[in-house]
Length: 141
Picture 1 (cartoon, rainbow, N blue to C red):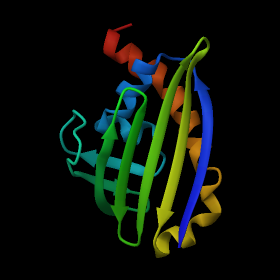
Picture 2: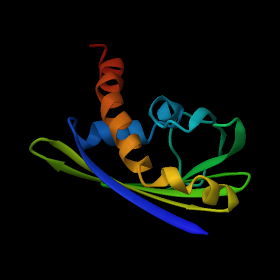
Picture 3: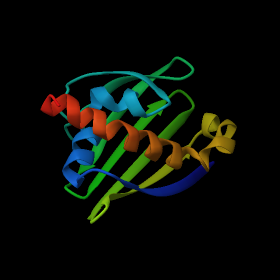
């Protein structure tokens, strides 16, 4: 079974700031509620496998499959489920309009499908909350 959900938010940050957070694999657990930890290089690299630990303490792999100025695609797999994520970034006068699509497949995805509809919104909200603190940490402000 394969299921998809989408969401959008305007994040009060520049596209470059949002992109920098999406491309920092070590920071993904700060705002993705399913991720407990990520091991691997700090710099995002296409096709690089990162070791991932998720709730409920499952181990798997994560990788970036597309990196562009206005799009980032990711995928991750744990026993019983694979997920593909797409992020789109469009700068506006009020910040950056961020779109997020999540596609899940596998038996664990079927068990978790009740939570999928709200998942993009939850991730987008947490991303929006995290971007200002990530920007401050980088600039020392």
